[in-house]
Every structure is written in structure tokens, then in C-alpha cells.
Image (cartoon, rainbow over all chains, first blue to last red; front, top):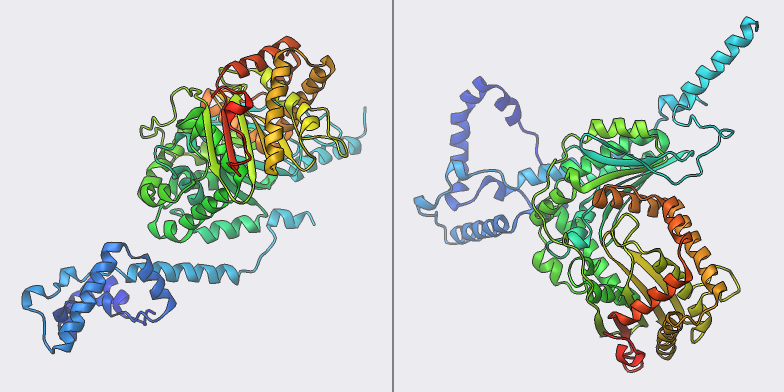
Length: 130
Length: 458
């Protein structure tokens, strides 16, 4: 589900991150999802098994909040309005809550695939005896 | 003087043997130890015991004092058991499973009334890997909520279903709870869904795991491992395990016998359990070898094919299709001698009457000397065979180490049984009838008798 991204590359270099920070802030604001009361993780397409499983694994409170945010955003969208400014999601509230779980699940699946395609070799000490 | 070549060849051979089979120094020609004795020790605050059976495989177990008896909330033992060998801080569930499969090993966590056992079986050379694995399970299992919902809870639910479908299991558990109420009487699987829907949560399971895997509460027992090796690896890997347990007083008080009667209606089959206070394990304080002999004497199951056997109940049961078995269940500080009867309702009822009659006969001394001699031999054989059985040996030894800091020495148990007199068996039977019994009937309640009808005190 995760698309290729330059973000880790940039974040690793503080000087580069400092350059890009204003641009990133502008972009997030221009994207407009915070004005609808959404977090970035609410925008992840959920029509696949990985994200469905991740959604199942969310703690009840987070799952409830997510549905609340989505419905509120939907209402706003239907009525062609933005939320009052006080209710916008602030940048510090815009934390990843779902992508962490998704990464875990992807790591699990990758591990499974790695183990599945593993080539078994005899241990050296045992191989010597034969 | 011997020639140089001979001396060299001998040295070479010795060196080669050392290199190739360091773990099996005891060859075929050397006398194998005929003893069941476990060598016990302590490393890094962890109690461990081992016996070095010559053979290519090892059975290693972590025996923890965390059976259903010690759980402060229902279902916790099952929770901890089902979390065993799942994701830890270092490895995922899948990796643990695949690695063990590659090493050709078996992982088997199970629990009894008093103990939680994580058992592993593997090839001798892999000892360090599995000691490390057990240490990892004990110290760094992740008790994540999603694992609980996706993997642990379904297993607990299956255990509950299986329990409900088995009248004999229900009867035995019911007899235990009549006899001991809380503590030892706690059922090993839940009879309703309430325990795990109401009380069980990953965080409480994690808390109980801290109790189960604290150094004073578990022991490592190995069968087929060298004592020095085991000592070394235990010393190396068990650093991160908590040294003290959070306080848990559930089940620690001396077990008291109550007795009583319970009748449960069940559609699928009939089971009746008639139970009496029994003997504690050999390492406990209330060890009575005559109970084991009495159990064999009552018996019910033949050890010889095409014969009903010598046991009194085996001969007296109402029909060949009726299954009767007498078990002397031993726990660290109490025991239960119980006869289970299963089969058609009428036959179960008849056999239950017979059981009490026979007990009265034994108490009255109306019993052949020969039968007692047979029962003694049978009890001794069973005990020794049980000791030879790796699984039981591990469990008893671990339990002995944790509960009474003494390993279970099977040779001495056999000696104790040898010393039982006819008088002791008779007086044991008499005291059983004078005390309150625990009687549990599951199945067709119209046909199954009440304890009062059988002539027992409840």
C-alpha cells in the first residue's frame, strides 16, 4: 500500500529537512484534509486485505474516533463547507496511528514470504559427517 | 613398550570420538544408568533438574507454578498458555514456528491443575537454541491485544466447547470443585463463556505471566541433557527473567477437603465420578502410598488383553461396555482418589452401587490377600512406568522443585509402595467411607443415583 517516498531520505538529513519543512507545511495545508477534520492516515485507501486487517487491529477508541472523523468529513463534503477553524486538525494532532499497524503487518507478510522462499542448507557441523 | 603407531591410533580415536559425539559420551557398551533420579541444581536463580538418558533426543520443559489452581481470575492460565511461543521482542510467532520446524522440534504448551508446562522436544545438539527460546518466551513475549483476539481467544473458546462436549471431563472437574472448592477445585477449562468474556484481557494475562515466569515460580527440567550443559545454558540465557513475582496469594493456602454432590444434565453421554480424599504427591506432606494401592485394587481397567484383569471393579462392572477407571490424582498438598464410570445410564448406576459395596468389603477386611499383593505389584509398576514416561516425569519433577524444592524421586516412591501392609489398605478404605465423598453425576439424571442412595456421606 505504501507508495515510494522521498520522505525518509529527506528526514535523515536535518539540513535538507529544514529546507523542505515549509514546503511540506504548505502542501499539507493546501491538501485541505485537516480543514475537514481528517488525519493523513484517514486518507489511506482501505480496500485491500492489509489495511482491512490493520483496521481490525486498531484499539476500540481509535477505531471509534476514526469513524467519527470520516463521517464528519463526509458531512462537510456533502454540504460544501469546512469545519469551524477551532475544530481543524492541528499539525501536532496529525499523527500516524494506522500506518504503524500497516507497517507491522507488511513486515509480517514480508517475513512470511522470506521464510517461504528460503533455501534450507545443512549445518556445517552436520554436513561434515556425511 | 607399545609401538608408537598403536599409541597414536588410540589417541586419535579418542580425539575423534570426543569431537564427533561430545554429547553422547556414554556409548552403548557402558552401563546406562537404570535410575530415574534427576540431578537438580540452581543457576542464575533458576531451579533446574536433568537426567541424562543416553539417546539422540532431548525433552526440555519449563514447569511453572501457574496452573488453574493459582490463577486469581478465571482463564488466566489458559491465556498465558496460549500466548506461549508467540511473538517476542526478538522473533515473530511465524519465525519461532519455522525455526523449530527446521530443527525438527516439537513445541507443546499445556497446563494441569497446578502447573503450566512449556514442553519442547528436539535433537540433542539443539539444547542451547531451546533453552534460549524458553528464556525468551518467559521474559519477552509480547502480549499484544490483536494476538489475543486473533489467536488466543479462539483457542480458549475451542477448549470451552470441547469441555462442554465431554461429560467425563465435566464430571471430573465437578468432582474436583466439590472436593476442594476454590484453588485445586478450579476447573481446567471454562464451563461457560463468562470467565473469558468478563475477566480476561491481554493486560491481566501479561500480569499473570509475570507471576508465572518469575524465577521462584518455575523450574527447567530436561530429559536427555547433560547436567553441566544445561547448567551452563540456563545460567547464560535466563538473565532477563524477573527475579521476584508480583504478589499473588490465589491458591497458595493449604488445600482443604470439603466433599458434596453435584448433578448435571447432559444429552450426549453418562459419566459418574465417585471421589474421596487421596494422597498428596511424594514430595508433598500428605503422602499415603496405601491410596495408590487401593486405587489399583479398585482399578477397573485391565492391563492385560482379553481379560477383565484382577481389579475388583474390572470384574464387577455391570457390562463389558461400561468403562470404569480408578485414578489416584496427586497434587502438591492434597489428592483425590476417584472412580470414573462411563457407559449406558443403567449400567453406570449399577456399577456405582457396586463400587461402594466393594469399598465396604475392603474396609471390612473381606478381601483376598492375593488381590492386595496383585494390587501392590500393579501400583508399583504403574508408578515406575509413569516415572519412566518422560512427560509425567518432567511434570512431577518440575512441580516438586517449584512447590517443595525437591525433585520427584521415583525409586523412593516404589519403595514406599512396597512397604504398604494389608492393614493399611483396609484402614484407608474405612477412613474413606467415614469421610465425606464427592459425587458427581453427568448425563441422564433420571437413571443416575444420588450419593445418598449409594450409601455415601456427602
